[in-house]
Length: 603
Image 1 (cartoon, helix red, strand yellow):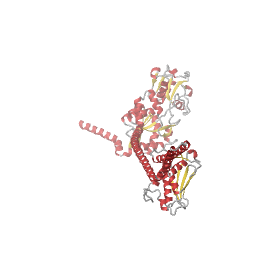
Image 2: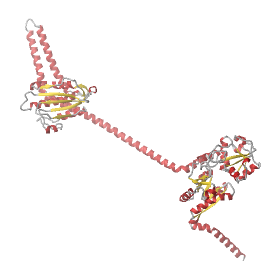
Image 3: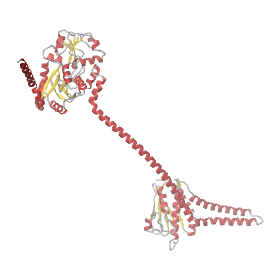
């Protein structure tokens, strides 16, 4: 029987456990009633924390009926244990505790509390309070020997903020405040001990003193604030700068979508709603910058460099990866561009060297071509040049024979001999001049554009045809003034003129019936930047077809011609930045070309 009773007792206990666990199992079976636990850090009695935050939890239960939100309040140690065990899903804590949870448990910041007084960024500080009968203190060193009390070393809006101010002035509480004590919660016990004379200095969060006086538990004339800090954000006195206060965060295991929906619901809470009135806040806002909280943790020794780097890594690692990827892309792009630039620069240099070699080869071939054409022209003018040389040679021969005859006569006529020799010397100079003209025309020389007188070039070119012109009785008209100076290669321009003069002579010779007075006319027409030279003849002229194909290679009307003379003329003129063309006229032909003027001669 005893064993049966024991068995019944065990079964009863199991049934009790099953019945007790039924809501939890039900919540797991039906996700719409899944429990969501919200931990709130409280520095007051438990019932005060529940009174303040329960309306906010009720608001969430109304907005999300498929979930059951449960409020859990506690001191720092209790909330730390709940976060470490993963019991709570969301936490409402101060900025220091959030940063610690973020580092240790990968908590994620969701919202910042918009306080009843002040701004989210400037919501809480530390107030150092003394009794009214204590002498006024203006320096922190004056409290070193005082009996100081605070709630806990972990109290952010109290001891920790004040500790930073002391450290910044070279005071270490553990070394310089031998009578410092921590008396625990609730916060009003600290004021009670100060008022009872059990302590000289009390450290509390801002506005706790004013709220206690407003509630009638203390009188305003009982206390003084040590070193009031000038600020216009809070209607309370503070001994330190102000910092952000409450932060809502989610634990790592909470789904991001659920956290986003809860954040949207809390952001819709307005001032005057039951949750804000009883909770003593104005609503929630987006997360604010916690840089000054991080600096505080560093100054008071709660965050070493490793922790700070870890916090920054958790916060900005996504951006760091993006920046790193972007940097790698830029490096890769730079390396590729640099490679392409070097490769294409090398190819361009090779092409430039090849082009320079090709240009040099073309220039050499062109120079040889022009030289060969001048030699060909000289061969065609050989008869005229032979006749030109024959006259001075015959005269020299006659003068020499005359001199020999005079030498045989007695007495010698020295004056007559001297005159004959002088005439022979003149004829020798004429022959030499003809030979120099020919040599200058046919010799090879590098192309060189210089300032030359176009009038002189025309005269020198005509000198090569002087005997032909006389024999044909051609009247030549050459402009004597004004003198026109152009930028050109003298030999090449003379080669053009020789080609055109020779063509004019042949056209006059082929005309039937012959003209009564054959003419060859040169006309210079200067303009603003260049000069036009027109060469007219009274020959057979050009047909429209011949004018249209005048500069086509290997097209000629001569039986023994190559059809390259006018092509060479065109290339030479265009190389001098000029142009050449044929004009229509009633009698004969007119060939025109332009050359650039010397800069000083431009209009």
